[in-house]
Length: 230
Image (cartoon, rainbow, N blue to C red; front, side):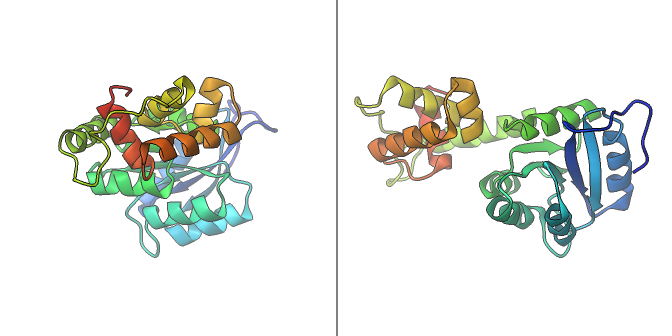
């Protein structure tokens, strides 16, 4: 894309791919984001295949991802990126805010989730946060996730651990990590919040999962909410 007097060249700018199957959305969005001094839109993709190709050509820091795309949808593309390019953050921007879409995208590894009601400042803020290893969720998405998690915590399945009290042998740090998982932070976000390494975060998570019999991150969110930590 052509430059602007408002933009700066050189290192430190986030390299961003904009993915949306509609050119009428994709192109104006790329143009608007490109006006930010710290963001450079390096590619605009119409489907998941084009996203993967753009990331492979690199370097790319963040992909702004639509969910409903031909060839390969946003969730599968996010899953592939998480597996093959874990250093690339994904922020979903979509019209869909149903449980299946939200949980599917976050489960695939998306670091942020916004609806298309989000304004330019919200989107650029989410891109910057994702590039820094933080998670950003649209308020509507947060409310829906919390409502779903609380409903499940209130009526857990027989095999669910959400209704059980936390064991007494959890350390204060493990409780703190569980609380931050419940707030939606990634391992990197937890590490930055607590001023510890990601390796240490993983150790705490492994320990607390073993002590509480938590199965996965979604189960941890339910457990944190049920315990009043999130």
